[in-house]
Length: 218
Image (cartoon, rainbow, N blue to C red; front, side, top):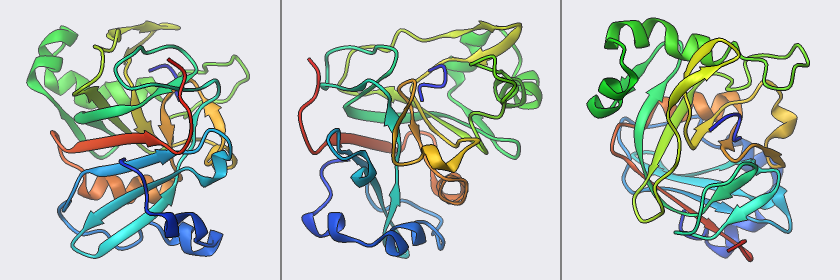
């Protein structure tokens, strides 16, 4: 999803201090123990968090989401809105890592080698706002395909002359002040350290559950 950019956290999560939250994913394990869960709070975006269960226990990290709000599970994908529902990881992109479901590679019309060399680099060089700022995906991009939601209308395409994979994703940011805010085109964004930790444990096929502590837009 262009710049677009899990079940509910227990109540005690909302009482965590900022210091506790930013500890987040500093000590990841090599495997997820349960789905990655994201809970968004449309009324108080700074209380939007992700939780991860791995070999080191439960960790919590801050999340930003769509500047227009959220759409209910199974309804629609729309620019500026973050969709709720269950998703699976279908691509993992960074400067150091390239993994993508074979069907997506075939859909791209390019070889795996070419995608590995150029895809994330080119995606992250796009200036979406025309403000001279690039690297809006930060240090990585974890693409999410819906499991129990409507099919996302995204694809490989050209944007400002750059070939990209256009999807709903968890990604980084070139400005960590945007994390914990309604600031993306629909994707979920996280800080650089937290995304680095996610990239170290997330695998293709992992489940991600996105829910909301509040109303969604039908």
